[in-house]
Image (cartoon, rainbow, N blue to C red; front, side, top):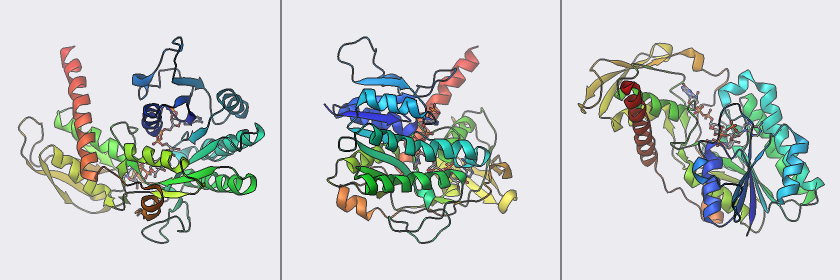
Length: 362
Ligand code: NDP
Ligand code: GDR
């Protein structure tokens, strides 16, 4: 039985990856942070009681800021594969917490690599580093591929740039099987609530049920290459099953504006929107609404712009060239953006119908 260690197991990708590895018969260890409230909602369904004999999933308290803790967990678990997914992953928040982000996302990766080296596990343990399309930042070339130069545009991306290169350096210096997956944006019903896709699907669902009137957005001109997290964790696993360690772009190759993502979500609830104005004065109103079960009114202003959500420096356009992943890994995305939108909208409508029921019941 192979053993895997996942940092960031309580996050969107950590939860899907843990499920995938368990389905492949792995013993899965995950690192979770201590929190004053439960923070394991995404993995509660795969939790196993530590008292059972044949345990396949075990959680350890830890933090990427704590070297001795990382060393101890790696020593105890002796993993064949480490997936370093833990990070302060919100680009906008990284402008508010740049030092914390550098420590967790940048030096945290060094802590993992160096623990493996110090423990003499360089021959045994393969490492996956969660790199990001944010490394490309200011557009140098489209579509972006493995050889496209980096130009990070946020403290998050700069921290991830250190993590990218320290992974490459440990591979070259110590012969470690350490790889970067340069993943473009990927989403799901488990996506954190403050990332743009989930903010929109939650907002549209709440408006449909009459629980909210308007959604305030930032830069809706920006373009992203959105895939489904389930497809992307499959790519992470494939990267570590290769004969030699390499870095890969994982993307769909299709880019969409935030504005069009908004349109697609409203379309799921039978609403056609009209966008008017420009920049901070842009608004979207309901042109027509075809589903009488939902609370939309013609003329209702459903989208407004609030500059508070703008970033000091923005990444305008991401579109990834996944040729290498297709040819070397035999990977391709199964989900289209339309399928992703449908799944996220369905999940959030379900969630808020339940919430509304309990609210009304009180
Ligand atoms: P999430 O924000 O959903 O999850 C991040 C995880 O990291 C959570 O489990 C979080 O714990 C944990 N974490 C945060 N800080 C620390 C720390 N100091 N020590 C240990 N763990 C910590 O991110 P995703 O699942 O979306 O992304 C996974 C990884 O992939 C991240 O590294 C992200 O930067 C990167 N990435 C994501 C992309 C995407 O589109 N989703 C694209 C490219 C890269 P807690 O639950 O307690 O907050
Ligand atoms: P991103 O994701 O920054 O690409 O990083 P996010 O969903 O936060 O933003 C995408 C784009 O939407 C614009 N935007 C808004 N974003 C948020 N969060 N909230 C808003 O109200 C809003 N309005 C417009 C943003 O300006 C941006 O252009 C994600 C994270 O998962 C990273 O960890 C990961 O590395 C990259 O994807 C690839």
